[in-house]
Amino acid sequence: MQEFEGKVAVVTGGASGIGRAMADRFAQAGMKVVLADVEEDALEAAVTEMRQAEHDVLGVVCDVSTEAALQDLADRTLAEYGGVHILCNNAGVVVGGSIVGDRDQYIWEQPLSDWQWTLDVNLWGVVHGIRVFTPIMLAQDEPGHIVNTASTAGLSGGPQLGIYGVSKHGVVRLSEALYFHLRQATDGRVGCSVLCPGGVRTQIAAASRNRPEDQVTDEVHRIDAAETAKRTNDWADRIGDTGQDPSETAEKVFQAINDDQFYVLTHETQDPNLRQRFDNILARRNPELAETRLRG
Image (cartoon, rainbow, N blue to C red; front, side, top):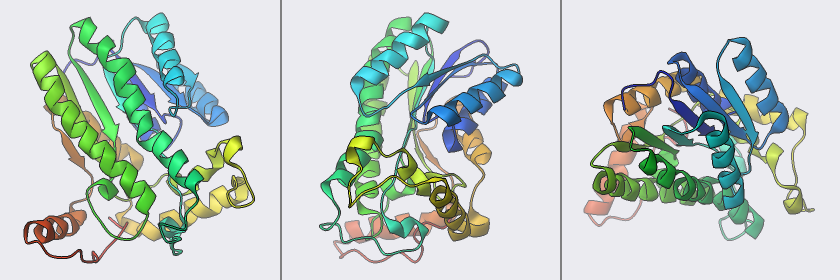
C-alpha cells in the first residue's frame, strides 16, 4: 500500500504508546484515523490533541477482548468514514513482575485470571480484529494493510513473561497464516505485517491499570496512578538507552506498510538471541538462556 492521503486507519490501543505514535504517523500522511482504546480518559485526551493539530480523528471506546466491541468499532468506522484501509491490531497487556525486574511467579503459580486477561486482549483481540475487519477490507477492492502487534517475546524463548510470550507467539503464527491467506485471496492487494518490538518507552509495564473490574480480587488488583508511574519509570530504567521512542517504532511500521514488509523488528541487538533459539531448535539442542531479555 503506497497511497495514504484520504484513506482510513483504525488503531486499537491507540490512546498511548506505540498505538498513539502510529496514529500520529498515519495522520501526518493525510489519513483519517480511528483511535480505539479501553482507557477512556487517555482516549479523550489523544483525540483532543490530534484534533487540535487539525487531524481528522474519531475516538471509540473499545475492549478488544470481545468480538461485539470490534463489530461496534467497525460499524462506527464505516458510519463516519465509509471504509478502512489500514487496521492495526495493537492493543496489548502484560502481567508479571519480571518486566520491571522482579521474579515472575512460576508459570503454574500464576492465577487463571492472568491467562484469561492476557490471551483475551493480546491474542483474541487480534483474532476478533481480523474476523471483523478483513471481510470489509476485501469487499472494498482497494489496497489495504493489516498490522498485528506481537513482540520479540513472540519470537524468543526463556522463563520470563511466560503468559505474555504465549500470547505473542500466537500472534506471530496467526499473522504468518494471514499473510499467505491474503496473498491467495487478494493477490497481494491487501498486505500484512507483524510488529515485533523490543524495548519501547511506553506504559506497558503498567497495563494492570486497565484490568477489568470482574478480575479484581485479593490476589489480583488494578494499580493506581502512583504505581502506574512507578512501573513506567522502572520499565524506562530497565530498557535504558536502548529504549526506542514510540515514534521511531511507528516510522518503521509506516515504512513496512509502504514496502509490503512482513516482519517488523525494531532492535537489531535482539538478533543474536533469536538466532540462538533457532540454532538450538535446528540442532535439536535444549533451550539456553539468552544473554539479554528485554533490553534492546
